[in-house]
Amino acid sequence: MSKLKDLPPVSGAIIWLQQIQRQLRLYMRKVEDILGKKWHHHVEGKQLKKIYEHFQKKLDRSIQNDQFGIWSARWKEYKSNEFEGQIFKIEVLDQMPTLAINFDKKLITLYKEVRNLSNLPKIRVPYEIQIRANEAKMKYPFAVRMEEVLRIYNRTCNRIDKYSNLELLVARSRKTVQDTITRGITDGYRWSSDK
Image (tube, rainbow, N blue to C red):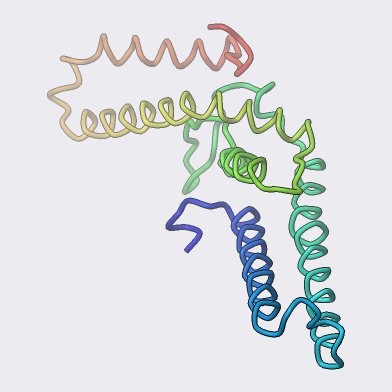
């Protein structure tokens, strides 16, 4: 269900736990409406209230420690030089070097998590994680567009290589694009540069 609503896993789990808490409070109000305001003074009422409070504390601990705490600690430790590093990187796929964009997809999940967690009560996302998420949000559209451009370039080059008679027609354009890519790699275009 969380994938359908584009909820990342941690914020989806916390939202689900908070919905369980709300439902539990609603049931307890119904018990009070049926049995009266002093329902918790009865023997069974005391036991029910004790179970209710224990379950509420368990849900709170699960949200704060198990879900959010682990997620927060993991992202505080996450070391990524995505935004200081170069835009391009070379990956080896099927023993062939391939040009790729240096952008970790986990960072967009981080942005979505921070966006959702910031809207939840009792959750305070650490500042350094918020900053990293905002950087990812700003760079993501450029990274996606550049990946798309590289995909189109590679597909076009493959088609040109298939039909050798087209190679002479597009040689100048191909060389211009290759020079631009080479300049991007050798000059060290970085996420932080204005080029």
